[in-house]
Image (cartoon, rainbow, N blue to C red):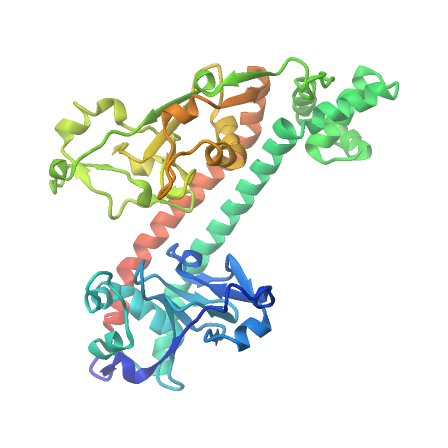
Length: 454
């Protein structure tokens, strides 16, 4: 550590300002250049690789925005202050952020990322602004950075980066699993693909057995030849697939939905509960206090509880006992960004529900977690948007949920669907649990590496 250098942060980095092309100029927007805002990287991941909005080359040249290079850093300077990411490819950005890059042959950008991540609290303390905290160029004048030679900087970044790479890989795997589950839900319960396949085969003079094979092909994505091979090589799997296909009706009714399926009020198939209004004076700092969630805890389909407040055990398991959450509960934001949701994991418990969040839970013999999740992922957002109230900030509650009806098949099919999809849920939970461990180890190593202890 004695051979390390200490400098003002402003002396060893380049600070780059962003901008926004004119919204009124259509030719500036919807191009091929990613244009970042804090919403694109407010997720604790090291790398940002895409943006909600894109601009054209003309928009880049005709505005004050700049194009950052691959591996440059971006940090939010206004509003949600201190969000940080490294670019996986060149991108432009808005004026609420700064681009940062280490000066050549002095600071490695990977090391800079981890140094800022470890010292983000200090950076926030040095913000300015009478109403809103803001990072300005002067902020970097009042913060020092200690750093070894470039080779050692890169070694430190590589060690820490190996954890973040695995975290991001697990996250991408989970996104793929979620997409598969969503695609299956849509095919089975919205587009009725297996039902249509059976109906079409029967309309063409096929037998019920042939109709079932058609549904099996749609469900599994296998050809007739592949199904024959599956029957010969794995009769058990073939039999399970046959059972699933057989559970689908073979006719679409005059109302356009599968025969036998019915519209049911949401309260008949989903047990939902809105959180109480826990007040500031009820918060506790006691070590054995019980955390309760708010909408800020819902991030990327999971719960982040680092900043969650607590109430006493006496209140949590007494007055608020019926607001205690269970593993696999689905919690949904009811204001702000409507319909943002997460699954409760065992590692989150004990945990209490709070205001602005509603809990979904399947009703026994009426619905399943997989069916509820499919509804939340594919249909709930639309249902909320057409019913939510509030002009300044949209919100919804039990009153709105009671107005919603769901098209529901018989419970046997829901059970078979859950058997398929639950495999994805368990893999997802395993990946999230591993990520928790990786984050914990990385964050223990982070200050030690930056202090030269390792």
